[in-house]
Length: 316
Picture 1 (cartoon, rainbow, N blue to C red):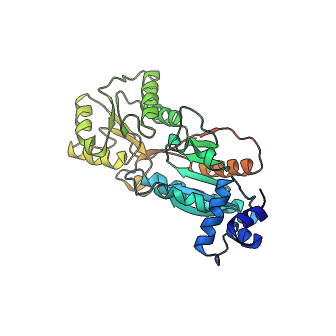
Picture 2 (picture 1 turned 60 degrees about the horizontal axis):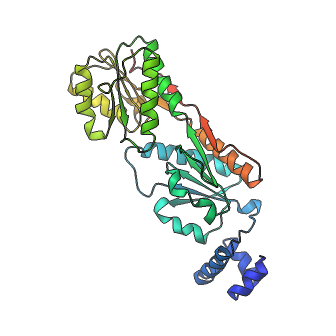
Picture 3 (picture 1 turned 90 degrees about the vertical axis):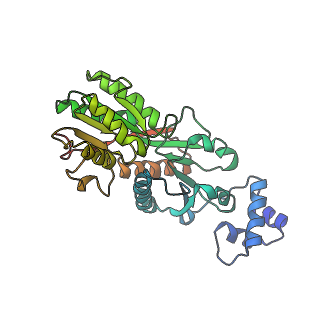
């Protein structure tokens, strides 16, 4: 189908259709909707020029405490990296995805979304979707994954505690089974503990929501732990608070490693040793993937990048 045919079916001129696809501001909304409806009906996807390379960044539809820090850091990295490749960005909350039917874009990037929610992506859009910070058990057409290596991150933390001669490690994985990256982290934590000769039974490895940390840490202290690893969420600051309630000092009594929370981890008393995704590398990988797919070049369905260990004073 050509622009002239869309113009005939919608009752407007070819130049008007062209202006709709180029997001010209002086187009009536009813005309814009009519043109996009016909384009969608006939699966017409105009080729965007290099000056109109629009990328939609799909964000969670509401602030998700406590992983909002990760969302914000990824968003900051993407909004820094993608414009450097000549892309124009539009931020779209996930509860407003119907707007995708009325805009033209060459790719989309979803932060922290579940891949199964986009299993029909290729049937609706002929552009790539990059999901950042999630894994999936299967591939979905039109969907690519860019994530941090959760298995490597768990090993990074456990190995660091092993090198510092900790004897018994308690672990609290933020989240419920079957949500986010919680199951990947739990399996990897158990494997790493066992590989380094640490006990890894259910009394030492827990899933948890924020309100359960104090109770769980009390149980872990009764088990005689001398180190605590809290990946995900805001486990670092909650664990520090809980340990203070039990009159335990960090790191003299209990060493602590948590996930990096950029706005307070380094300012804790003591500053907290953390693991952190490489946000710049994740954004760069997403940009490279989009560039490759726009050029019809192959790109791996999964890109997995290493975490970073930030050694500070909370591990003795």
